[in-house]
Image 1: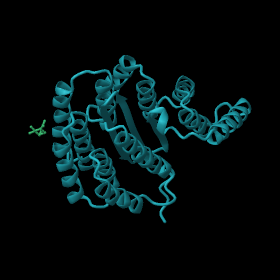
Image 2: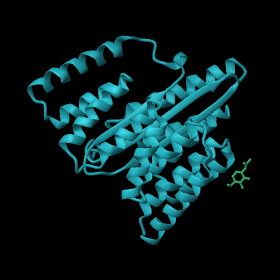
Image 3: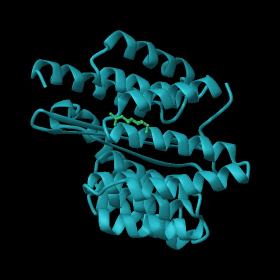
Length: 280
Ligand SMILES: *[C@@H]1O[C@H](CO)[C@@H](O)[C@H](O)[C@H]1NC(C)=O
């Protein structure tokens, strides 16, 4: 099977927050090709769906120590820095992950992935004001950068800001993509629009957009993942499972970030079961 481990970026954020009986779910999936492998994946879930085993945490601590030791001898090893950053993200040590990214920015000032990761992690760690500034800085340089708009959508919605103005800007960026025939970017923006509908609680409209995306490109797993999650929120388990099965089939076994899809699906399922028990 063709290796997807290089030149493949997956950014998945599944954020599930429970406010008493009010359930709010934001899912975002952006998959893009780039020059360098990089990863941003963060899962914010309620403590009840957190993996209870501490084994994986111990393993992560060991890994972190190993990379740190390696880096004391080879302080400019980009791959080791990147691995250290990933381990720290997985261990939810976000300020420490940002320290590593700052080092990567120093070493590779031309690489525009690092500032993007920095802004995303600031946002995950709750520093929305700073995250917004940095996303805006990225958009100022590259007005159709879908991940930066995606980051703004997340930061706006997490900090309770309205999305209307931002959606207008997104439509402007989409127009630009259309004129420049950037079809891949255009499709990514459509996923983002669907996500805004999910944030607004307009599930039927979100599903309509995802169905359109499936018609255009049936081999893209992202709309199926989003649909699976929406159907599990709507407590249509069988329907949800159909879509998750498609995701499993379309994401290669050896995909480096497969665990994130699988983990996120599991988290979502546990979460909807919990919501059911509580009659939420
Ligand atoms: C859902 O979105 C569509 C398209 O934007 C809109 O026409 C419709 O009124 C929305 N429905 C709700 C319940 O907000």
